[in-house]
Image (cartoon, rainbow, N blue to C red):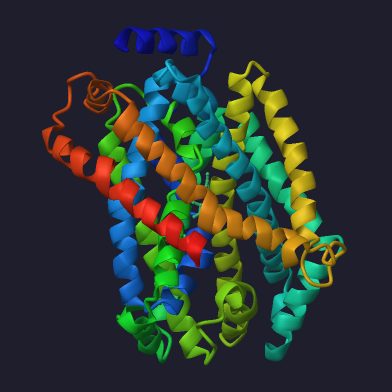
Length: 463
Ligand code: PFF
């Protein structure tokens, strides 16, 4: 396989495919993909719903035992093959070209996730704009729910902001892997960290903040239901952007001398830290303003504006910072989704820029369908099987598709790919010592991860 692999890499160079320039670039770009709406909008609310620290404990277990294993798996598949998912699997196991279906399945998942992601990012950009122009500050405390409902049902607002957000995303992709994705990620990720830390400090110094901390860190195992465990697993995969091939694409951009295991560990630590910090920024503030912390998806758009308004002028500044944080986090994630789909078409021979524009146009259409499906929206009456488009896409991409993709990927890695190839790739052709990894490989990759994914998938289908 080593011969084939060298050949593949020659082909990659002939193809003018550029990769990231350094391990730092890899970590920033992949952490940019991982840290997103999932961390700041979804994770705190899931934690609140399923027992605070009890949820956190299970989340950490899933993230480090399954999520990180998948991250490393996808990086190896990507760098070893030099391809995006559809070509990567058959390149590593030419005997069965049908493994490309796993790659195609991932592309389908990415299409759907990006559509939902763009809609929520569009709302966030809209709220950022409204916090900047003072619109949010002029709304009375009991008016935020009606404001949010009117915003999402508007025939133009969500679409306009979605398109603006998508144009920014496209511009980064058109800039290329190094000058677009890597550069932007290196710039935005540190800003994001500063923003979230600032918000934490403000939140923790509010009177009554300790109640919010207790809510987040007090373990209540009675709330940790079976449903909750599945939701937490789904969240762990979604949050690390694994199970849909995105990290295979970023893996194909990792420099040959970069340490994949170390990268995967750093990215996971970044992802978890930002999620926990987001919880620390949000819950104390919510409690201090006497709001309901279990408000779920509406928390960010309906509850936090009340919190910001209760803080006066400073609150307005923090509203701007918070929505900016959310927009930036969403942007670096949307970038990786658009890049994954672009790389897929580019590997099929299409010009990169043409591919990026085509995917963008398709996503505008998909995004409009999703955006218009909310109550009061132009397509809200279309509910096949009793669900609107958003719920369909959200349920599929939250609970089912990533775990299925993850299961197939980890089976390929643990049972189909040659062990020697994996060791060779992870050790950078024998340069790095990975003896400790070999023990983990047998236990985690071949047994624990597939078994956990299979059990949870069966359970989620049964429930
Ligand atoms: N990890 C992102 C989040 O937590 O918001 C979501 C995501 C981005 C999933 C990119 C998949 C992906 F390819």
